[in-house]
Image 1 (cartoon, rainbow, N blue to C red):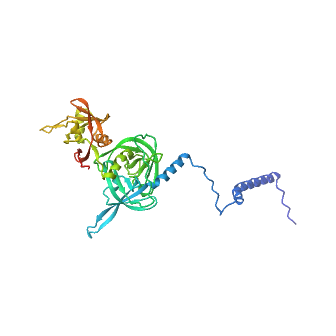
Image 2 (tube, rainbow, N blue to C red):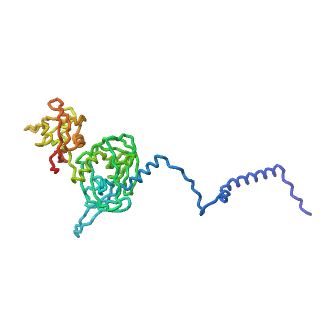
Length: 399
């Protein structure tokens, strides 16, 4: 007896199975499309063709061009100090630190920060093309945190940085910093001028650096001494310091303005030191604060006057020291060329804006009345006592 043939499936179930199969086939085809497309797409060496992003934005092209033009003018500076072994008495050269600098002229002068080379016994300058040169010290001005080195470049001399101005800077304009942060060669950071005419105490504590440019362009260890440029690639400052509890960039950096650099560097190259314009007076920062608080005014009391100095010739009067140690003020300088003076550092910063031989108008409070006195500035040097914060201007034999 033969078995009975299987019953035919239900027509509805048969249609459902056909529909499900068709849907599965469509899904499989969808997922296979990229593979099918790749089989018929021409390749070169099995590498996918890259689509170009198109032209760079105008500001991107400008920044790239600025960096490429300025890079060769920026140098990397490494310093070392000599250490004597106490057992063998041999002298070794030990790496001390690194910084940045920039080419000043065609004679091989390089400008950097004073604190970059301070206490170093030797310095090496590395150019952008990889050449290394041993640098000779030309001159320094610690009060401005500026130093000048010189290298002997015989051929393919790097171009000097174009010089701009800083007196006409505006808060908000773009700036560009090139340097070697953390020893990373030739790095570009960008930002804006975030403030002007800032003051910062130098690392030694001996002076206050005035007229600093504040910027949010990232300045980190190793950037010191490098150029701060405007959007035209012109030098507007020397990156000198940052304000940061951690020691790395926190968005507040400072640069010595190029107008100050233009006053100081030519003298360092010519004379090896900076001869500052001088009144020839002695003042005391801490004592001045107490006297001004007692008098209820802002200014700087003249404690002593050097005989034959600019102040002496102009007829300024020094304070009187009584037998019992009291100080009776005479002349209090309250303004220079109409610009108010509220501290000792501000007074010297105002005077430093001029040159030896310039005639400067001082506003002096004497016997309760304000008088205008003209003073012809003389060359002088600054003697400083750190413990008492007393400053005395003396003749430094500039010749």
